[in-house]
Length: 121
View 1 (cartoon, rainbow, N blue to C red):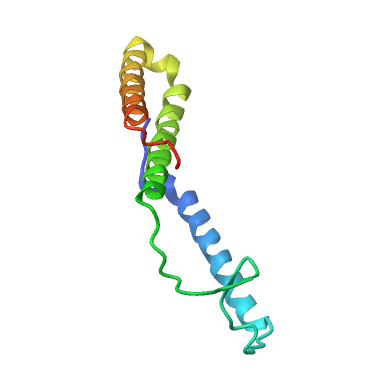
View 2 (view 1 turned 135 degrees about the vertical axis):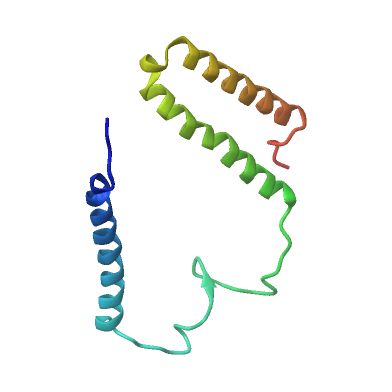
C-alpha cells in the first residue's frame, strides 16, 4: 500500500474544522453572552458549600498512589485493543507477546496487592 501526504489531507481538514468550530463557539459565546459581575457571583465556592479555612490542606500520599495505580492498570486496555483487532494477522507470535505482557501485568498487580497499595484506610 502506497501512501503520500495527500492521503492525510482529509484528516487535516477535519482537525482544522473541529478546532475552528470549538474556537469559534467559545469566541462567539464570549461576545454574545451576558456579563454581569457582582460581589456574590465572584465569590469562590465548591459544590454550593461556603469555603472555610485554608485551602492548602495536605492530602495523603495514599490518594495519589491509588490514582497512579489506577491509571497504570487502566492504560493496559489501550495496548490490548489493537492486539485484539489484529489477532488473526499476528498469529501465534502475537499471542505469545501478549501473554508475556499480561504475565508482567499480573505480576505487577500481585506486587501491588502484596505491598497493600490498594487498601484504603
